[in-house]
Image (tube, one colour):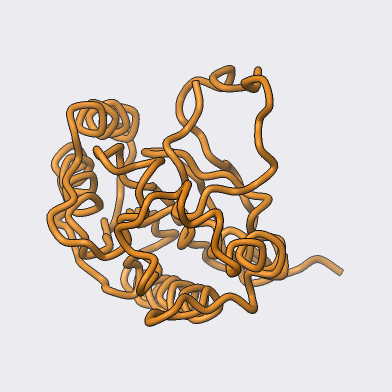
Length: 232
């Protein structure tokens, strides 16, 4: 017996472009962290790739680096930008603004790496709370857009750990497995939500599938909190 067809919604997940802090400082909710020249070039290249695609909405984290990335894409596709705080970065509390090399010596670091569902940042939120608010936001936007459009396609610009949490949910992974996912700056990941299940169509697409495939000598097995600066 065949399953009846139902409308699907396609979500494009985009991480913000590079900033001066990306990859070595955990920016978190630090205000005034803007795209640098590299990040602006990344956003422009992504916008050019997406320009032929009809988008029904562009939603972004309220943090400047995401808003700036989203605005470049929104101008290319001709839709306004909507801000949703639920797609904001994890609130890292006392970890915010500190070098990643320093944070790697903290007692909490191995928990973040191996058991992130149990990780709560001092003075901040837990990764489980971050995941819950982001996934809830996706569900809300999916329902809203399905009520307004036929087979809607929309984009969310957010942060590495937030996108990893949404993708883990779409893949049916426990949050403790989300560090297995890599999300580079200005990468594109795509999830199609159907009545029966989500389908992950693309993951960490940066437009050059060969970039970064040969690791540097002594490459670490640790995931970079916040997402890192990418490879290649």
